Image (tube, rainbow, N blue to C red; front, side, top):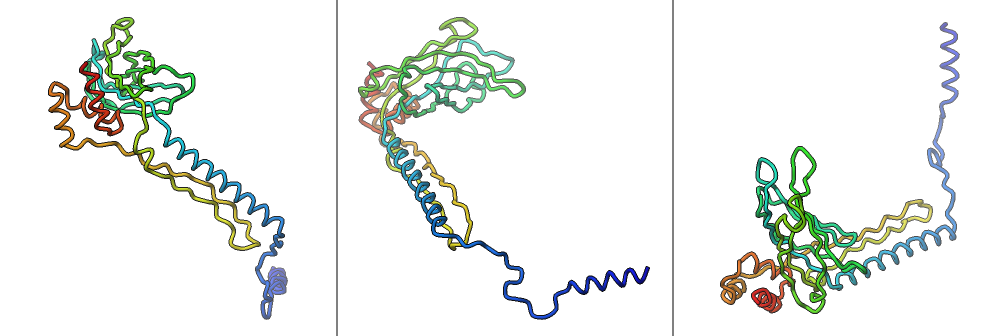
Length: 271
């Protein structure tokens, strides 16, 4: 047994390298990269950079386009379903786009949202689908009421439309209550003043490197909501003493922070 162990140890010793190590010890042989490979990598990087630039310009053009502004103000429902007060929220469908408001906890039959959504006009889309849900904890959210609202042609002429629309539900067509919605058309200032950040692909530092290209990412800028100053709010309220403060704020946001348009819209609502 000892002789076998001795022979094994001798064989292992023969495999040990004795002396100075060569310069290429433990180095991998990397095939040199020819000019054609470098050219292909450069073309790929240029193509990605061009796509990123095109996407960035497209985003900038979209920011300059007019938006359809839809403000869901409040609702008056005829019945509270369930043992406790409902927690309603609204889901809007405009073409292939879907938007939701925040939930009004314990809103019951008189929920309030004052939520404005902005969407690009879509070809062939001339109506808005509105659904009101009751947010539930231990079961699926219950659909309470719904309606379909035609997009008024007047908004494309600068007119702001504020109206109560009848709702359909378990009580029958147009008998589930009403919902207050404001519709306008224009360019939000926040979409015209911000820019995106474009990250270009990183090129390899060495010719024999096989590093891959970094994906391009365009970071959207955070939206900015127009705010109504206390002084402007007081001036408008003095002009419309019977108008609710929240309604004034909602119309102001729907008109993208334009004070003059807000006054004109409120005049139309009073009329």
